[in-house]
Length: 204
Image (cartoon, rainbow, N blue to C red):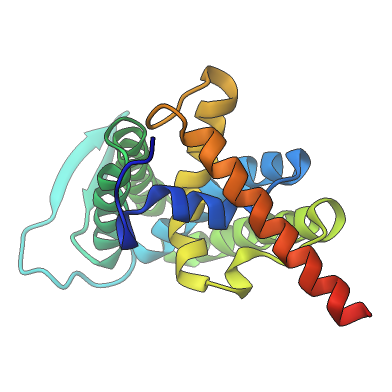
């Protein structure tokens, strides 16, 4: 039984699209390892963007260190991701939203300790390592180009939630609703079969 949702909030469609590009177990494991660090490091560098809300910054101490939370584009990104994930599935989406908030607060803490001159170098290394690992996963194991080449926005937005939901399903057998996994697997296989047919026609 499906969720009955369509369009932007159709979790089956989103998950099947992303899953069709990530069906190899090794490639999935690589993404589970690298996707959230990409999100974290992106928020880290966004910490230094000037605030666009005329609101006082929230300040607190963490382990004896002074931390300032800035209401800027980094906060907005974390907020949008959190709300979107929670709207897709209340349980796993709420967990994903919590992780987004933790990433925002954690990246703010790290950024405030490093300062911009060091933070951008750390971010650069993390991004290069994580993206390289994912491209290796696609080229060597998945043998299919990343989803971002077909739908950039959907790939970027769905990636953190996809790997979390994949981990929850693998480790705990979690499904947003009964039958979700089997329905998505059918759609993923249909997508893969269609892609393979197109590839064979191009090679013929």
